[in-house]
Length: 516
Ligand code: SF4
Image (cartoon, rainbow, N blue to C red; front, top):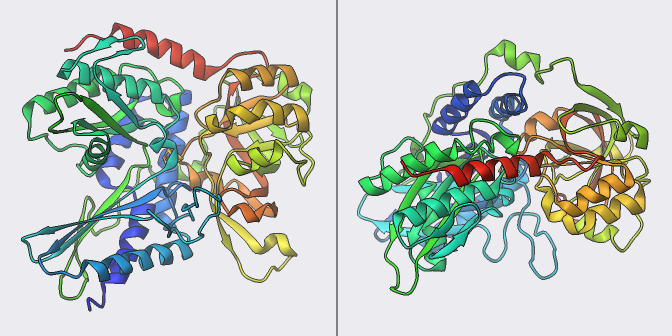
């Protein structure tokens, strides 16, 4: 039965995870030319562009969070969907084994990671029949950071800075702009939004996500919605949220709106926010062999590079004002930093995300965190086979961008105070409790560039060890030796937060926007 089907799906997953589609590349290239080089936004976009090219050239994940694999499959009448579902699941497990997907499927009750991306509800596979002869499989990989910034509004409602959003297209406009503003840099902006007007709470979110299968430059068949898309794009890019929420000219690279009928009593606006690492591809398959006959959203040929070879070779775009820090780091060094400083960290760094933070609230760490750098990161890690230099060299990190830090807000200040952590690195910023904790204990928060998993993996010289592997590879505490790891101080030990400043400034712009 369809001898090439399994290999075709593995190929689809591999390309989706590692090679950004041309329409998204074009939008990011445009964003790069819009920002001034040497600004925070310009530096962030240059790192992102390098990362996109690096991922494609070594066929490694663009972002370490390879998200929830979601397949949309069209099959001819009579095709065996039970067999295809089983093969797609096998292909997901195989791609995970090859390091193209991070193990991301976690038992919601026990917290146990299945290790192969299989489990109840994972992956998501939707089938539809159609009256065509071939099979179409489309895939989107949407990570947790941007998934957490999805929003659903029940109109009418009152919105910060925008006032009342009524049951009208004007109300929809306000809801979508509010969602983009609220997301700030947490979903790794600049992002794209898929929107559904109407439906119920479930179908609304589903239809919103389906909009993300449209290309960024297509035209909405409904002229009213097309007009709304264009007007939201123009207004969202005046918001000054900017790349990674650092402030800047590009906050949104796409807005795609669909509509479903609704119950008279309900008026939902559902917003699916996807990050710049907008990974979606598709294939057409021969229905008798399962072989790929054509690609969707990309050419079969090699993708156009984002950067010229000399820019690529130059690496991180330095201005000469960068501050080099060697871990462990002292309180004096940290108190000397201020918001906006760009630092290059070398030495030991420990990863820690949700499970590690929850654990440290009740237990002492296995390592000395005094003066330490704690990196909010769930890397993709490969086992190299028998260790050549002791157990530590058994591992190598193949993708290692930051994860969304705000999830650790309930724990972070306590952990800094209890164990003497001096530097926390993540993305999207943290809240008032952490900001107060930084000032009290003498620590800083650094924002790394979200999604730049290949770029940061190249800053890791080796894996020196690991604690709590029982939490699964993304959640374990990895002991990393890094060199010149760049990040920006966005919350300092003097009570300043770039995230709060950008949120306040963009909120004022939001309040001033008027529909075209
Ligand atoms: S780019 Fe950012 S939001 Fe997107 S999957 Fe990666 S970490 Fe998550």
